[in-house]
Structure formats: structure tokens, C-alpha cells
Image 1 (cartoon, helix red, strand yellow):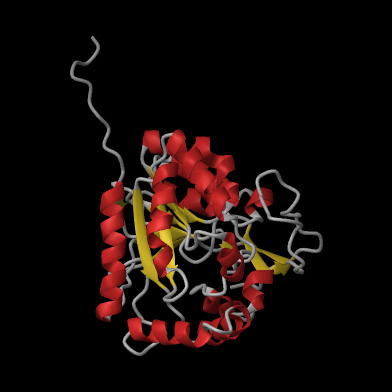
Image 2 (image 1 turned 90 degrees about the vertical axis):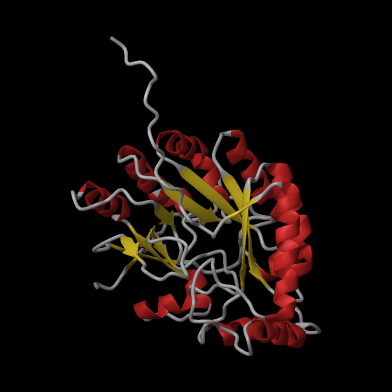
Length: 339
């Protein structure tokens, strides 16, 4: 794979009506690299992942979530799994063209595609590059169903496009919302959209007829597990129809970064949180199983599962598996053909 090319004057993602921040833009030096990908559709055959095919138009993510399991993937580029993942973003500038080539192949089955799995496809740079939008347009042209998971506001720009996809072939969106207040959200998702903005995004998608849900993800024991009922209730009020939940997973390269930041952010609770994660993972901070079907262990996790399930049922929320894309819609045949 050729090395990504740094961009001398990258697009400014903060000069956009589609990106909402609390206060001024983050004081973080952003480095943007462009690359021409050889392929764009990734295939997964693990039974623990809720989708087979996915598209990642970007590498790295400016949202800066300190728990992100995808951080180690940046090391394949020669970058670090810590702040490099947040500040050095790689843009696959030919993603729509590669996707069109794949979907045009006679060997393509029309299987649902998940956006994204290893990054947020609606992070701030999407406001400038519009790669996710162009990829969705390709999916619409090929009548290919999609599933989207994001915590970014840029998706609001594409509500009409997602509604068109839903009508023609099937589209489903999940908005990730792990916290019910911004004081805690700013600690763990420092540059992602505020809580009220994500709820408003759910409302806009629901009003447009796009099936939309909420991902209470990740669960950080001792931090946000008690907020599950409030998150589900606020999401349901906004129009969510489905929900999922995952337990935090800290691969080897993520764990030290997470724990250092945790000590800075919640010094009095850090030890208890670390212990809680290991307790729910059977003594480990990580689990080789990946994806939305990851579950914890022990009595405490069963209590969390019961709490989630009880409130999801009460609110009429269907439980899904993360960013599982919907199956292709079947075309309904007219009762009587026109003569």
C-alpha cells in the first residue's frame, strides 16, 4: 500500500453549518493525509460482528473518544494509537469510485453495507470531502441497502438521501449516545456532537421516515451504566425505534492510553472503573471477540443486561446488533398489472 500523501492546506472542517460545537473549535493541530485506496469494501466473516461488508472512507477519527477500539488500526500506517488517531486523519479520496466498481461487478450479490465500523463516517472532515455522501449515492444508484452508525452532526446534511435509500432499498441509522449529560460526554467524547444535538439528529431522521435507533455504547461500568434508562427514554422520545448496547473493549494499545486519560478525567473513580471493566470481562480489559455482539460476564453484567432489556421493552425499542444493515427490501408487486 502506498503511503498516504499529506495535504498542505486541508479543508477546514469547522467552517461548516453542518458541524456543531460547544464553544470555539478544539485547539488541536489537524493533519490530513490523502490516499487512493485499492479497494473500499471490507469483508468480515466473524460470527461476533453484526455485518459482513463495510465501508470506511476515513482512517482515524477527530472525535477523539478515549475508549475507541479502532485506535490500533492506525499503527498499520506507521502512526500511533493515541493522539495520532485523533489528529492524523487519512482520507480515501477515491472511495466512491472504488465502491461503484465493486457494486458494478457481476459477482457482487447486493449484500447490505455498513458505514463504517472502524471510524466515524460522519466525522467533521466529511463536511468538506463528502465521501460518505457520494458513497451513499452510489448505493442508491445500485439499490444497495445500508446501515450507518455515527455520533456526528454532518449526517443531517444527508437526511433526504438516507430517506430515499430507505424507500428504495433499505437504510437504517444508529446514533451512538453513551452519556446523558455533556459534562461526562466531554470527558470521554471530547470533540463529538453534544447530547442534545444527537437527540435532535434522531428526531430529524425519524421525521424523514428513516429507521433510526440509539447505541448505548460503550458501557463503562461505574460511569454510564446507571444512565441507560435515561438515554433510552430520551432517544425514544426523539423517535428512535431500535437500540443496542456494547461493553467497552480495550485492546492492548488502547488500554494504557485509556487508563492514563481516565486518571486525568476521573481520578477518584479511575481504579473502580478499571476494576469494573475487568470484572465484566472475566479478569481482562479486552476480548478477542469483536462487534456489537460482545457481551460481558457475571452477575453485574446480567444486571446491566436486565436494566437495558427492561427499559427497551417498556419504550417499545427493538434490540438490534449495532450497525447491522437492513436486508434489501423486497419490491411489492401490484395486485393488478396495468394493461
